[in-house]
Image (tube, rainbow, N blue to C red; front, side, top):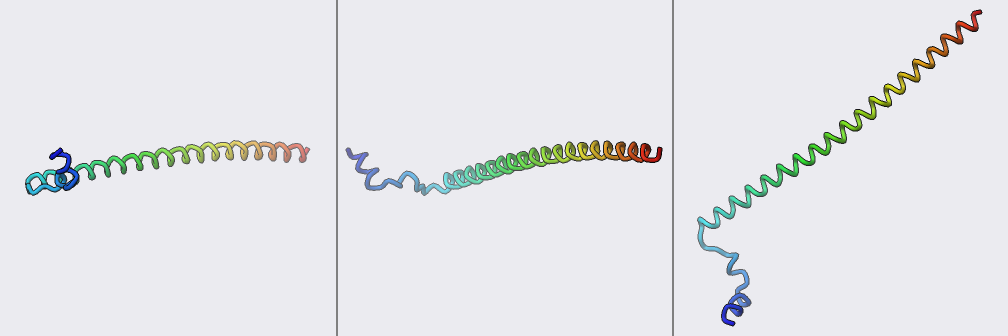
Length: 87
């Protein structure tokens, strides 16, 4: 009962530490965790962007090759048309 009333009266007593060495360690752990989390998030975002960019480039190359193939067919048909019209 005494322990329960103590935590009800002072709920944040455990979070407040007057030991500066412990505070410094907690601060360094928080900073390191934030740094690593930020790096991992950045790497994930960068890889995602790279995948999207590669997909777009592949689509553009496929479309461009299709256009070139169609242009080649058109030029062959035009040359055949010119050849037949001259006869």
